[in-house]
Length: 260
Image 1 (cartoon, rainbow, N blue to C red):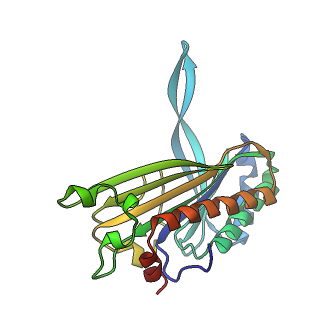
Image 2: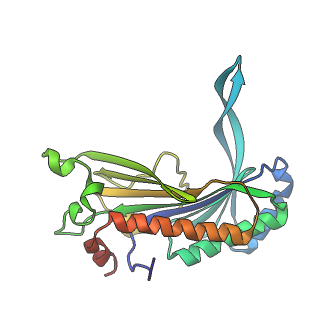
């Protein structure tokens, strides 16, 4: 994607790997926690999450709520948090920097989990970026996004209160779900994102007014034997797909502003 922007609009980045179920995860937890603590992530918490699993009853699929244990491992600055359950490992970052450093942090955590558990395979690898696009003083939002991303607001007249668009595209091995939400007000997160006490860059968190949220979620779904190099390779490829989508959504003017 070239040189990192000086003031990128990304306010949350997430990477996740889903793997073979590890039902005895609690047995490995002390070793994982100690390894991540030594790697710089000493803030440990256990969480209970309700998940819906589909069971067949009387021949009909029926959603069954179940409790699942999740564990988080954060740094002291509240900018990076690892999440772990018995089928997935993820990293959330509110201070992204650039892809190489983010990927290195994620792969460090992934390696610590594998060293403790000895994973067998992966079946989904994903990367997701949330960007908050808002105009600087004297600009309007439509100078930052191409018309396709702005929706019908500019053609309907009146004042746009909210606009939503979603596209699912196939990029060979990878798929990309790209959403654009235009709304007024403060910073919000998608309902499936748990932020906890993580700290967002003030420049992106404090703006109030009309803005757009770009939500680009790329993923690879195929069962493969676990490989550190394989996971890193897929993340890099997904990053390229998301980068292409980002450049297809934001205007040259936006990139000039973000690089000042």
